[in-house]
Amino acid sequence: MDSIDQRIVSQLVADARSSYAEIGKVVGLSAPAVKRRVDRLLDRGVLRGFTAVVDPEALGWGTEAFVEVRYRGNVSPGQIRASLEPLAEVVAAYTVSGAADAIVHLRAADIHHLEDALERLRGVDMIDRTVSTVVLSTLLERSPAPEPRNGP
Amino acid sequence: MDSIDQRIVSQLVADARSSYAEIGKVVGLSAPAVKRRVDRLLDRGVLRGFTAVVDPEALGWGTEAFVEVRYRGNVSPGQIRASLEPLAEVVAAYTVSGAADAIVHLRAADIHHLEDALERLRGVDMIDRTVSTVVLSTLLERSPAPEPRNGP
DNA sequence: GCTGAAACGATTTGGAG
DNA sequence: CTCCAAATCGTTTCAGC
Image 1: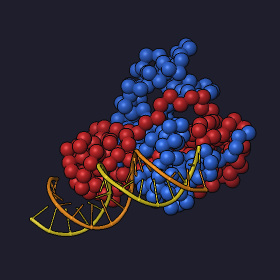
Image 2: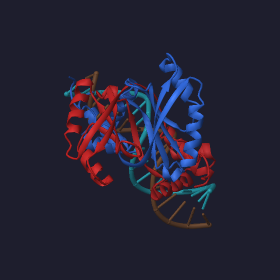
Image 3: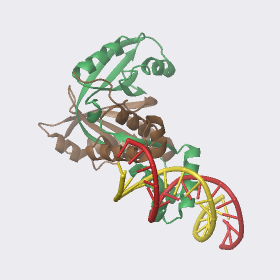
Image 4: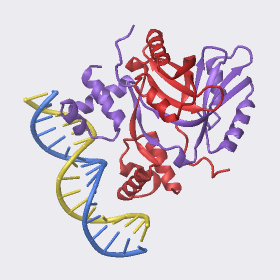
């Protein structure tokens, strides 16, 4: 993971469909050299894959919310994950420190659909209490830059 | 945006580097037909682009947190956005309903770096109070499926 | 280990029917 | 939309640093 790898990753984050030759022109390598590095980055798990960035509005997922979820008793992260995975509206979920056990990021078509998803979320077996916060607007969303610092 | 477009989007979300011929095989179209549809989806903004999915751990961004931010007085979303954009650790930010004005998603190298970022966040001019929640583990992260429902 | 050059099949891309 | 053709690209193989 040298500085060339970082520039390759940056380039792919900016446009995952750019060609190896194009990337090579930017980082100063030939296309095969770039491909070898990308393959290695995929192998090491630094690059997990390539995806399309979709406008949620355009797909009819215009409403989102963050929900703090408190579970009953002692529940493992695996159990929490398993309980949330079946809900299609869950786009992200994290275990967290503090009063709540998990933060769940929900996306729905509209407020009505969001209410429906929240009802189903609250219907999950082990869930004790939920506190939901509706998103009014997305201010920014971006990927972290490669190698921000070298540790503590 | 018919059912073929939806399947094309799904395919590109799953792998943004798959070829048009490959997508065409799945959706039952020729490669040029797929390319025209992808170009149109990009034009309409349904597809915003293509990006690499990076492992934050591998890049040295292993620690994240959600921060509820309360601003002083009446602040516009644009001002909030402008105040957060300079902070490299901010990966996402939303205006929200409820007690807080915004939710900020932070990524840092470690707890120390997170503390540093939080300090700089609290140093932002118009910010009144912050409540931070540290992420212990990421349970799941996924893209919303195309066309979940047809609206209200 | 790393690289670049060459070669060949596959893909992209624009135009015609 | 499909078909076709020219340009470009992906991928492997090779030899050299």
